[in-house]
Length: 202
Image 1: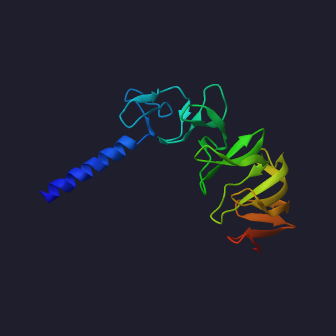
Image 2 (image 1 turned 90 degrees about the vertical axis):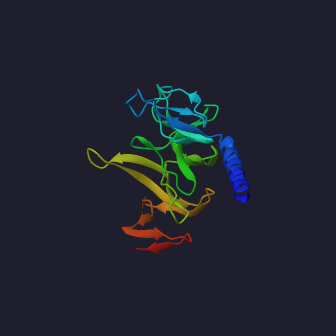
Image 3 (image 1 turned 120 degrees about the vertical axis):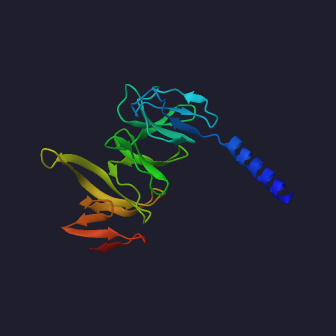
């Protein structure tokens, strides 16, 4: 009898969790072979966003926002559950920016900033370029720069570089000549940014 009661309690718990699942899930109809054509359905299998409405969908579980490609527009965008466009997402080749420290990069008026998975802009777009936040909790940015062709294929951003924390506070002033994900460069020397926000000559 005790085991029977435990099973009933577990079953009711599972059903409660199942009923509370309000996420949408990406699906591919069997008759469509093109994986870029997909839609969203709810936990009960009801189609909420039909296949083909978006040129591509990059989010498997749609909670508060989803990353999509919109027909007739270049780039990748974040939409909310009402399918309102929130902002353009920085894309790496053909995929949306990776989420690091809970944030991803967005673009507005040719400037870059950060947003979170709640659909909130955390750091307003104001940088010419900014790298993703690293494990140390900082991101290296270029304040004002000009993209210049290094050769026939590669571009280099020439400007002044510094670093910010997750609140957008500048912790290293943009006085360096170059930057990468973990380093700032000046006078031919490289400085690594550690978890304490200090620069260490490498």
